[in-house]
Image (tube, rainbow, N blue to C red; front, side):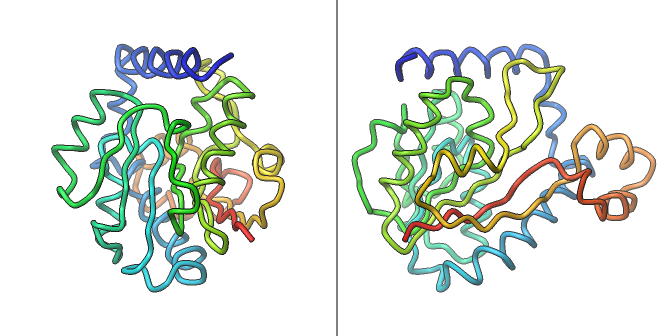
Length: 232
């Protein structure tokens, strides 16, 4: 499958998601949403930002698949400078949402990320729940190679995505650590298992939000990987 065909397929998958109403599951006021976010922030700070990217106010970062820009707003709060951030998004409606949310100093590049030509321009590339929506192996590798090209030597890729297939959603596919190693064969990968599996999180936080941290102590119930993929 070529790049244009897979990009069109991704657009169709997200359109189906909007039609099914699944977006309501990601309301940030739900405990099953904000508690995993808080957990991920703690691990991101302690395991990736502090050891690999300080001082944050001098680091350049691009997010591929930025959505409406929420991750970049979060990074600004943590200490990145807007003029050092770049947003890329494939879906037109999300590009528009990002333009409305993000500071003007953050550059927004719409369209297919594999067409970006800025080799070695960034200290970090952020890939958050991107590859699980790419079902074509060849396009996964093409995008991984582009992310690797964009990051400078000594920098790295921040990866956050889930590892298990979702039997209720054929538009996504889990990406395990072995596959990440295949996509980035020359990298040193620092991987952390995070995020209580969302179906479990939704059930137990409906009983009481405090149950999230209790059940999340069981590593086998965590569904995502948060990684620093270091480029030598």
